[in-house]
Image 1 (cartoon, rainbow, N blue to C red):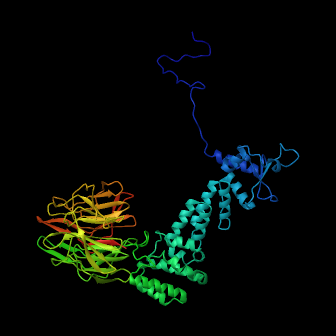
Image 2 (image 1 turned 180 degrees about the vertical axis):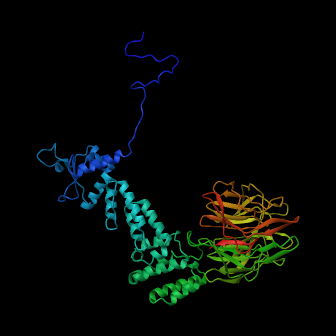
Image 3 (image 1 turned 90 degrees about the horizontal axis):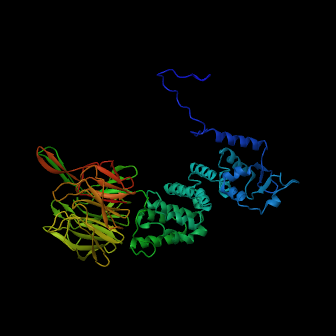
Length: 607
């Protein structure tokens, strides 16, 4: 019989669910609103002057700002160290009142304005801060002093949004002076990216010589031309000409004067009203014209972040109208690609068309030598002045060459090998632009043509190509133009010729070309000068033989080239107009603006 008060379950029914006994299970719950509510309540208690154990003063005679030691100690390492490390140096004079045990602790923070300190304490209780241009710097300095990092970050972000050409230098110097690294870097980047506008402001004109020279010497000025930097420097001198004219040569050594168009420099000199300044500028101009280099450096490179254009020069076009019609031409035209707007424009054409010429840059001028036209191999050359958009002839090479290697080292041109008529060339010759003459420099290890050539840290690197005994080589060698020493390095992963080559960030990139089966390659690889090792990179979107390849603003551009086309069983090499860009940071290729016309066997350089 069942006990009274306890019923038994009917037969066949399910047993009742088990109920956990106290202590057998646990769960965590969190109320996300509670911390905010707690802070608000503490702030209300503080406003009503309840339960406060700390009085903060901005000076000995300022009104008190009430607070709680545990709150301010939790808010900043500064107060945490003060109230937890046993520092007693100021307690006796900061405790006031007849009952020391019940009196609030008094603390004077010298150097912080009352309103600023009030804002900082309010932030510790609310997490809110109201800023404007009149108070932000004082609040930032005080927050930095008491190690209230959150307010430092808020003020820095506010100043970033307020950056303007008129205040960028002031904010940069403020951040530099208070070691605010993120704000400093942001401000200096703004100055570099907007240099021309910043240089017109009074802040720039009032800079010390040291700081002004620090700015104009930077690789990161984003300018359209070096003449803009020259004008900014001269404006700084003219702002206080009586005291600054003596700095003219100290300032000009930071300007890359060989990149300034001679006509612009001449015009500036002619319009200069200060006699002393005019004499100095005339001497600099004579130094440039005479190529003496005693006052300014003659051989310079464009600034790393200056506006850069890609020049695609010469080459050929081969297109199929049908299986039986073919259109061909040799280009003497030059296409210019603006890497910022990604637009093509045509500039002055060469005197003659050239297929597979050698192209190199010295002091912002483009030298084009050799090549082929109408089955004739050329020795002559010409030089392009971008600032004046004009070509002029230079002395011819000693040996006519096409499909050869041309590069510039220390202000001289070096020509290697190539196809020299009915044979493969193995000679090396050097061109002195000051004397406008070529002279023989030596011989290659093996006569070679259709190879890639680049320079890196004073050495010349030659890769791939063809010799008398082997086609589509994979060897990489270096040549020291000073000692004449050759060195064999790690070989490419894929034997190739007719490829494009370029150097970027301590790496040699090799793109496309043809292999031993006469296939046009889509693949690419790169060589580390630091580790002497090769590795694959993602393939291009298009196979390319004889592409024009160059690097600008940290990216690699592959322009045009050849592809194989088959129409009605007719197989032929045709030119393409496609352009693509490789970003080593993302390891990806993207399509860019195509050439106006298909082109291959051209050269490409960046200025």
